[in-house]
Image 1 (cartoon, helix red, strand yellow):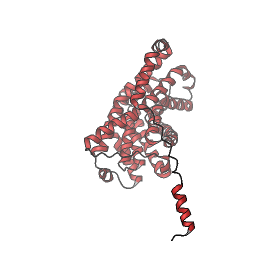
Image 2 (cartoon, rainbow, N blue to C red):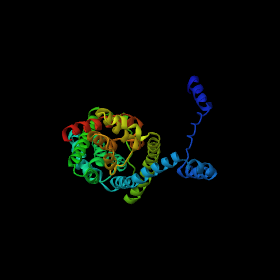
Image 3 (cartoon, rainbow, N blue to C red):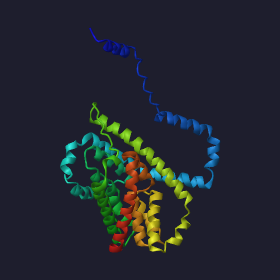
Image 4 (spheres, one colour):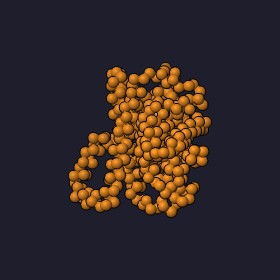
Length: 340
């Protein structure tokens, strides 16, 4: 016969009320619901919106916003498709065979490999996420993410066309971009911490590779595209509010000129395939300042910072963006002194 204490304990356990249920997680808006609300808002607020966008400043903002989106979305689609193809069709062991085991060697190899992918920076972010999902060292993936939009053949040709008779500008841009990208990769390999990085999860599908491919496209496009739209809106706002005449007084100072165009590259968020033409039009600035504009832009701008935060996490972006900016400016100044 059990001891009275044991009986009391059993009765207490039996009579004890059930644990309070865990609070249900609040469900957020789905994309369809958000779109429906946006349409309802647009229909009800149409008269006021018409008057608002009739203002010259609003028209300038909308034109710049549409220009950034139209310019970037085709390359984003290319990057998303390539990312989905990597995730669905490329065996995981391929990257372990293709990328050197030692991270110190894998970083420059990834930087050189970036020269063969004709994609802008919007495309390189989801591709880097797919590489990390496939087991590539983050340092090598980030090097590829920076080098690909900066030294690919389309960028080389556009820079050559934008600066006719100045092949040294093409060489300086390629050398500075590759140097900065490899430097960032080595810095991450040395100082980067796993807790700073939100690793993209690898998605498994039982319905075959094509099902995985289309699922990855839908997920990555909606995810990265949303951040691209946010970044484009910020860039358009900055372009509208900052007068171009503010740049003229500092163009004559070599140090301020470099910093001004580096910051301008971050704010305007121009695609790497067309930024050389913008740089060439800034005739009041020095060649080194123009080089800084072209090197910084593919590395970090407002839309890229938003996309990188969405792909790898805010803690990563808060550290990666300043490091990429500093490395790009330093490499541009160094190569400007050597080549220009």
